[in-house]
Picture 1 (cartoon, rainbow, N blue to C red):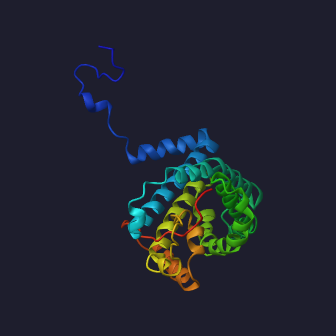
Picture 2 (cartoon, one colour):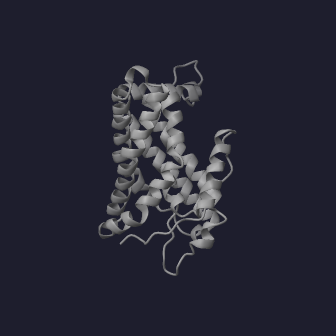
Picture 3 (cartoon, rainbow, N blue to C red):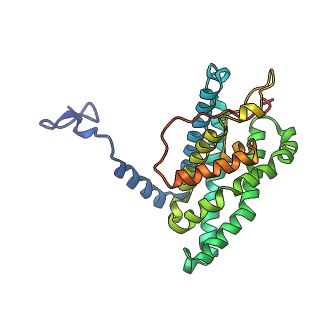
Length: 267
C-alpha cells in the first residue's frame, strides 16, 4: 500500500479515481487556463487547430487521390504548420484581438460601429500581413527561401481575395458573440470547417484543371485560403453557398474528399 501513487483506498472501487473527464470539466479547465495563462493557452489552441486542419486536409487528399493513398502521412508538413500556428498565428492573434478590443470603441464593444470598424481594420491590416507571413514562414521552413518572392507574386492577391469571401462574415459573428479570450479557438474552428467545405466543393473539379505532372508532388490542402486559390470563380460561389448552408444547419460529419493543390516539392 502506498507503492503506487494511483492506488485506491480500501473499500473504494479501483476505477473510481480514473473516470474520464466530462466535456464540461474539460471546458472549465480550458477557460481557467485562458485566465491563468492566456498567451500560452491561445498559442497551444492555434497549434492544435493547425495540426487538426492539416490532418483533415491530408486525409481528404488521400481519399480523393489513389496515388496519395499509398504515401505515408507527411509528419514534417504538419510540424511546419504546428510551428506556424503555435509560434506565430496564435501569439499574433492574441495580441491583435486584444488591441482591437482595447482601442476600437471599448465602451461599446458589440455595437454595429465597433464590429464594422474591427472587421475593416482586420481585413485591411491583418489579412495582408497574415497572408505574407504564412507564405514566407512556410517557404523558409521548407527550405524554399529563394522562391518566397515568386510565391508571393503568384499567390498573395488570389489568397487575399479568397479570404475576403469568408472572414468578414466570420468576424461579424466573432466580434459580436464570441468572448475575446475565446476568439483564437473560434477562428481555428472556422478555418477547419472552411477547409472541409471547400474540399467538398472542389473534389469533383480541381483534378480536372490542376493535373499532377509526372514527378511533381501534389500538395495536400493546408489552409482554407490556399484551397480557394485553385478554384474557379464559379466554384468559389458554390463553396460560399455551402458555407451559408453549413452555418444554417447542423455540423457535417461525413468524410471530406478533396483533391490536393500542387506545389513544388521542398528543396
